[in-house]
Image (tube, rainbow, N blue to C red; front, side, top):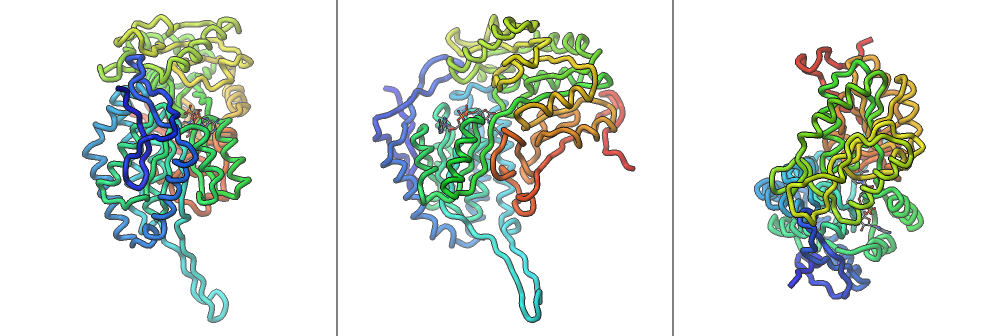
Length: 496
Ligand code: NAD
């Protein structure tokens, strides 16, 4: 009998009563392995009520006692993360090493949150007016909602709940219905760590559950990560209801390659950032912008590397797994036809890939498309698959203007050995996360994290310290200090 992933309410797994479910696949096998419950109004209300009931007790629990539980959660997570990685691979499809990588990045936020006694401190000013002192405190909000996407079933929820819980809030997490089991596993871990009933709830479902959270007067804030149209909807609905909101959307990330760049490093980086997790990353590189005359030599190096990549079941030590569903695989593959129709040149076509896995798996091999017109939907849309486009430009300025004209502003990177160009780029580029010789410049937990434009609505922070940054636009720079074996010159910031 097929199992149905239920909800987690009041520290118990609760079976579905709504009669509505959705399929969960093992993408490498290409078969439905489970169903997931889609909550109805009664279940949505029960999850929110559980969190609401738990809030007074949890928020009044001493910081020291809360910290012990967060510490314990960290230790358990660290000891058992292999189990979680297997769950991720079996529902998302990404290879096991990549699943472990996402847990490690999420764990950074748990480790950040164990510093809550320091992070939550207020300020005190003495004698601001004669005989008058002023002090500020930070207080937990109440019930907070988290709505997460399929592509990082462990890491993205972990951007939020460690901080929310450590600060004294209670949580209702609505994970993606495509890979829901990781969140139930996490809920069990919290229970094992000693978290009281109702502090962490998992509500599985679809739009009905999301709307239930958005429209409940008992939910104080929403943290959302997903595609841009839904991110915008979440932001608008939260604004109407007067809720706090951080709503992170989609992306279309470019990597600008200057002619002086170390092409071995560029080719490695394009492969890793274009095809890692089968391109299903919000920080995936989707477009290589090659400043001529670099394109031909670079393409040759990328293709040589693509020939060596093994696409297949993530449990078999392959480099790249399948796409999350057949529907998504077919949609991504359809862009290859569009590219041909729009006059681009398909250099490597992933549709013919011989995958190391079951024939029914949702396979699409790494695909490289050259001379993609910037008017084509292949250039403009977030494809979210292993399809890497090359756009050729004549100058650095043309490349920067192209990147800045895009609708999204999540991540970008420049590859160059010229420190001056790198410094200019970090100043001129209108994107939230910027890499210098780093293709996926996701900063560590305690820095601000988030894109610009249609990649983020609302607050500028996914995690990290709030405060003055709320009123500024964050830009995080990640730069690689090149090893001499990688072409020389160290890329520090100019000293003048
Ligand atoms: P999605 O927008 O389809 O789904 C995200 C969440 O919203 C899910 O929990 C889903 O159940 C819910 N949802 C879907 N349709 C809805 C609707 N009509 N009304 C209300 N809720 C709805 O996104 P996805 O396909 O799961 O994830 C991939 C997207 O997430 C990509 O666009 C990717 O770039 C983005 N993403 C962004 C970041 C970032 O940091 N900016 C990080 C990870 C993923």
